[in-house]
Image 1: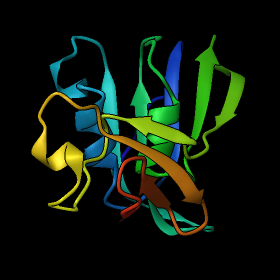
Image 2: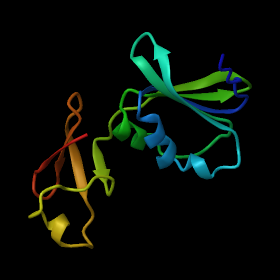
Image 3: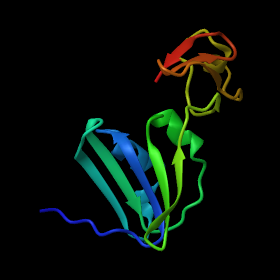
Image 4: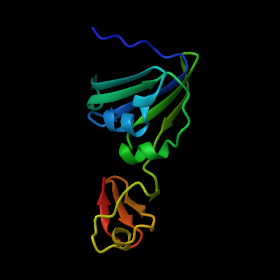
Length: 140
């Protein structure tokens, strides 16, 4: 039996699609921290079948909207005194700067190194973004 204790103060990132937990873990740089962090992978879930969960025993400050780009279905619980203080449902961001790279080899962002990659959301259900410069579709 695997036992993970509850956290007193910190953040729980829940409902992560199975397999994406490590990507979020690495993106947040949690492998370099000196506080308690738990990454649970392939946890049984009634909604998803299998899911990943990240528990962070520390109040970290970061932009939650970026997580909506990785997995728009995750929820973030802010824990204080072992109780949920706030529950945040992330959404895919409407605009993304320098997080995605245009796949069109003729796009100006592929040719010029000093131009910021910019994308805007066109279909949240399909996870489709469009390049601001060449209209190339980028699917998450």
